[in-house]
Image 1 (cartoon, protein in one colour):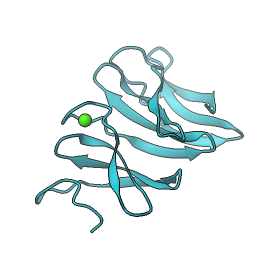
Image 2 (image 1 turned 135 degrees about the vertical axis):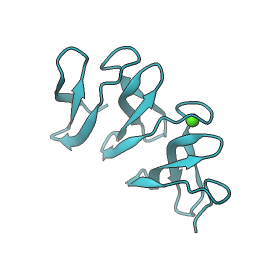
Image 3 (image 1 turned 90 degrees about the horizontal axis):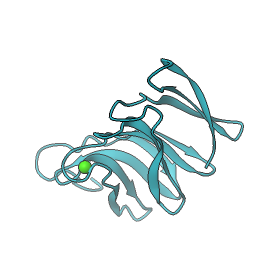
Image 4 (image 1 turned 120 degrees about the horizontal axis):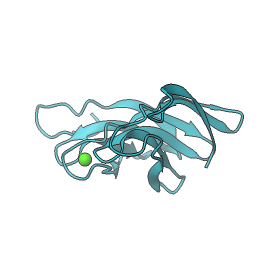
Length: 137
Ligand SMILES: [Ca+2]
């Protein structure tokens, strides 16, 4: 076992493994941070990248998508709902845009890199789920 991320008998349910920036990125649950974004380096030293929803509540990161300009993923907060996030090569992570403004999420998903852009499905709250594109950051 690399690390007992969720101490005790409960599992951390690691999933969504992606190689980025010479590290292994994934989501996992821990007692103090909830389900958030984690990374392990080549020495198998693992830590939470960013506790997006601070404390035990979770941002449930999904769809980790590596590009030449960083890693994109979706995450959910109480004030924004599920939206698109980005981590730079220096592991500086932030929300890209609140596509469906306010607490309702855009249900952003199906993220794919194509031709120097990011393509995904999202609902801005007025158009239903549609195809979006974004220049890579
Ligand atoms: Ca948290």
